[in-house]
Length: 70
Image 1 (cartoon, one colour):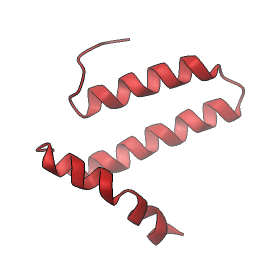
Image 2: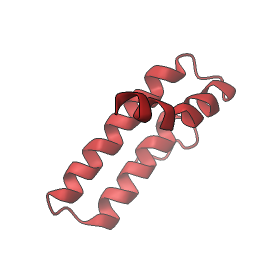
Image 3: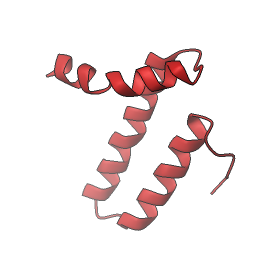
Image 4: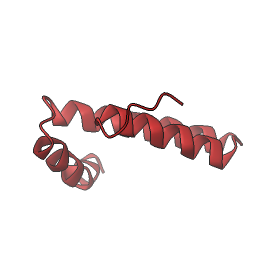
């Protein structure tokens, strides 16, 4: 299962490396953690649109696509 998960994240790691991320493996792991926590929040009944919006903004900031501080 871990091997399959690692393989699924390969395109993200490659994209991060192409963008010049200094540690694409760590950044991909951190993004994965953020997405996991977002899923936990949704499973706990949090508002989908709010979680989606904040999570997306967080990931965009993490990879340098946005400076927006929602």
